[in-house]
Length: 356
Image (cartoon, rainbow, N blue to C red):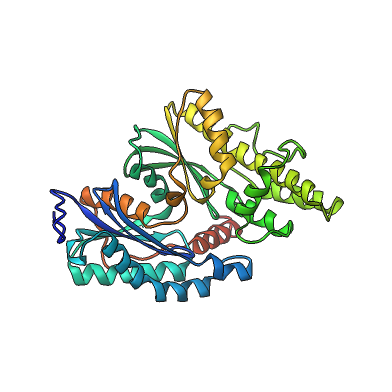
């Protein structure tokens, strides 16, 4: 293993450069031994995409091209090291926007080749759960809930690199349900943040929105019907005042959060684990953090939720996940390719249409 050129010696440490560009954040981080974050730099594009009410893939890709090298350079400087001190490179190779993924992956390949260090492709969803190791020691196995703008999934995590998918959304993800609701309510992007803010002063039981699969033992999720229920409600009351808007947001948010917590509890009990990890962008939601701590804690479960900076897309989680794989001896070849969210959804739809 390499030491740090500044004189800050890291004896027998594995230094990983993490690179993330799956959506609208350009990020780089330097991680020691998979568990210590030496630097984490994130360049967000939220202010640019806000004008369009959501992420525009083509714009995101172009901005990644402009930002990625300065972001990597800044991450190395903040870690007080040179690129020559890197032992391996971890990069998101999916799921995500194909153009955005290609920018990060191409950059990582070039660095891997020029520095002569191994490269590993990292699954973005598994990396969200790996973020917990940057701040906590969690006993395996545990149940992990990844809840973000494009994904809502439950995993049984048996080790640092051992993941078993238990269930996932059959349609909209929780983050999509928040953002689409915010749009019909006339709130600004990103919608989940706005709903969370308004809901804090609202009545959670004002409207009894449906809890999808509430009585079902399946670990899967479904939020499209909840969104439709909100649309039907607004047809009857199209222009709610500010106080009523707070109650709508609180009731809608409670339906999503309660569903997430109850399904996680179901999976934890079914798999006889003592710990739960909740990660992903929606894990920043204040009500989710509160209800998970209360309801899961009452059942004797230890609940771990990373700090907000490690919940939203970042490269520290990529570096952590990649480090654990690289230290096991896993490697990806330089012909490593991406897999995008859009492509996987298209393939599923085509297979269903063909009856396969």
